[in-house]
Image (cartoon, rainbow, N blue to C red):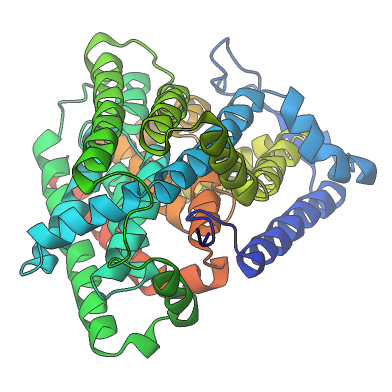
Length: 477
């Protein structure tokens, strides 16, 4: 039987592109330790900064050999659980999707979707975007969306679009939904609690923001998809997409079993996956129970993928072979994850992160409310480059933002909104974000191509969020 390439495979050019960017960022941070005076705040047990406890430590100069050891150090530092969890998730995702691909699961699911929406494919695009945005805005689902990205990309190609459209329908939609947070427990939820306001405060305004972002994103994607459908050569991933479509032939026969049996098996798997995400979100939001969603999703993929593979192909050995090949195909992305986390590690170990926060604090405290809200937005954007986690960032900066907001006469609800805007949208543009790196690696898209494709949309969203913050100040939100 002819074996085509793995459905998840890290492109060499995309890997090298991001590798160089991250190494450059690490070098810049290392050099800054010799040029910029370090400093430190005291912290409470939750890691929150204690206001007015800053100490200037002077220029310290971080040892050069530790620039190179940072990717190893992060495996034993405070971010070790995140690094290990996201790495295992990626390996399991790669292995499970290869099982699904080699047993015909992806082929069957895309055939069914195309048959149902063959005359309304732009309706399908809008519904897929809404699905991911709702999960992001209401439940805080972002990294987890990567689990469905390979199918959405292949669906996009099968409908006559390209890899970028597929990434937009999934990763971009989940990220924009996460940023246009309505009840997102990881951004709105934690930031509101730390600011002493209720999540329900300003809910109608945030719902309006969600609708505006949804309209902008779907308009952008539909216009782009129509352009690519008319002239495929205009796609930045045209050569890559030709290769993918040759490997993924919708008309080919299934390698094992009949279509109905294969569809039922994988429908069960994805039903379990979505149920896991929903149950975790409900437990997080309503009960307040901390649930390790990504490890649970990995477990569902691992067990479900192996069971479905064995049931369809009839062999544990073949299933294991498919899984191993799929995991090895995505393994290079683990290096990128380690490098991305190393940038933050260098900033914190060299006491530059607190120095950055202190410098920004000094700029904000004597400003007007209009200047202040912009500088608070900028403060979160600056920290976002080094700390991607919403909850960790909220515990770090909200104790600074809240007294600053009170000092300049800004409502705490608007301060929370500035935090959410600064925290969310840049997940899809900063090269230090682990989820973005995994998404680009899986799609074999270089960071430069992604940046060029999204930058005008990101600038539009940035200007819109500035306007929405000014409007919030104007109406006393």
